Image (cartoon, rainbow, N blue to C red; front, side):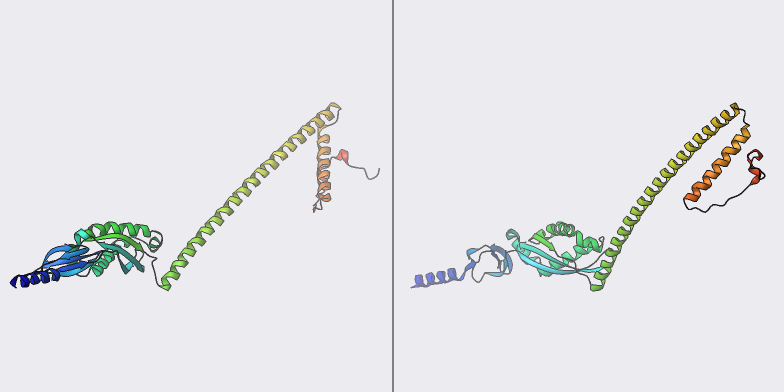
Length: 283
């Protein structure tokens, strides 16, 4: 009879100490209040009355969202949504259970401090275009620290920064002003190029006109010289020849101006007229 009683007691103890741990979970076992071991998924056994399961840890990846309010280098207060993907390391389950009283909140605080130190040297525009830098920095800063507490960082997601409507409107005005300034500079540069081109063309045109006028005067001078020499060879006074040529040139100039509808002011200077060329009224 005693054997059956003893056997029954043993069976009860055996069944009382059986513990089933689900997949992707671990259980922390304490012996008289002190950590003893970690139970893995499957059928496990503890000593009833001496050992107990003080808690269980989920090995699945946990999502920890956080809204972090930060101040940028240009004194903008921004709400930055951040999501951490963390997982308990099975071999460090005891550290994850005992070292952190409230893992999610404490992890949020670490993220907040890390982000504040990073964004203190970043402008608002940098937050919108360089979020990859934030992600890599957060991972580098938290990987070692989280490992000491039995957690592993699986990923960091930094969402679009959010600012107040007033700040967003001011930011849009700054961007618009910058674009307008760039457009004005481009337009001014185009005008400068056009003016420089026109100035060069005008200078080249003036040079060509001056060269043409100089050539014409040279040809005229050569013609006058030849005419004077020919007249002198025939016994005509050189002064009479020059007077005639100058008078002819003056009349041609007046005629050309009149044909083009120009206003002509005539100076009838009798003193420049050669007496030899004057017409006798009595004739």
